[in-house]
View 1 (cartoon, one colour):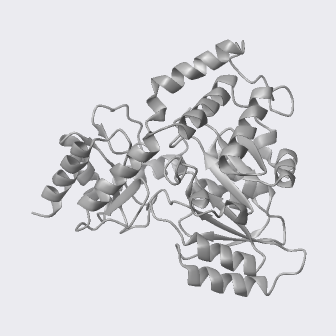
View 2 (view 1 turned 120 degrees about the vertical axis):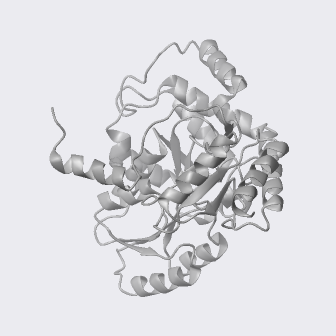
View 3 (view 1 turned 45 degrees about the vertical axis):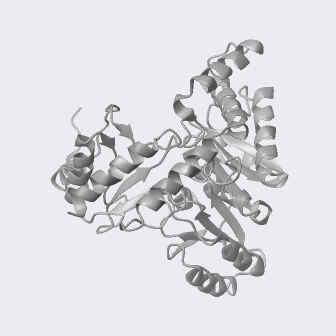
Length: 379
């Protein structure tokens, strides 16, 4: 059946604007684009240990067979949630099938009618979608702007009744900029005004902290937030996510988060992979190696116009979709896989090359890539 005209016109607009997304299987260039910061995604050790764990426990089952509330729960699920709690110093953890599921589940269920959500303007799309599904009102604040946060919190909290809640939402590392908010100040403001702070740590897990625990634990602030969200498709190299908080929050999500209730659970293999990845993270030199690579990159780019970042994500602004696409193609031709981030994913005029660093990138590869970028733009 033919695609409706309105949908065809939307596709045609993307083609004309050179913003049409396509799937690609190209993987031969040096990786400066994936979220596999520690190389866990292609780790034979994790693959083999996961297989051995399933074999040792006689878990020869391909799927969960149902939602966790029906037939999909298991001792392994609960063991991994306990492991995550211990690693992240949390009272409770609840596994979701993905970071997207975790965010839409949380934000569609927790903030209720009459409540208010205040979120960073650069917050991830999955959080935005969850907020849209909520019955609470929502407003954005300027990116990482503590003064704007404080002003808006003060204005909104003065108008709320005792039963109404104010939820503040941010990320510890932003995926399109690689930067971080001042979490110490944000927590001070939230505590003063009795706000509930939610922090998405997707791109901090495996990067910050002695063992990659994330930025909140690195700053010893993990007990100061209402909820933390960790996703496993980045540094852990697998799939799934967890929401961390109190036992009461976990019970509430089990009862009201629709993306948890109405979906088949993760397969035993997926849950076992999360366990093995956490085992490896707690015992890995890859976190230290990644930190060295980040240091090398920052030292070599001090004179270039990168967005300031201490994370594994570093972005170089090249305004205009066509310009940034050409820049990525030029780097690809030299053997470096660097992705262009175009509008509308980022605001028009803020298009950029997004460099993701990994523990397995050699110092030589990093310096050669920077030399190539410099030769393109600093002749």
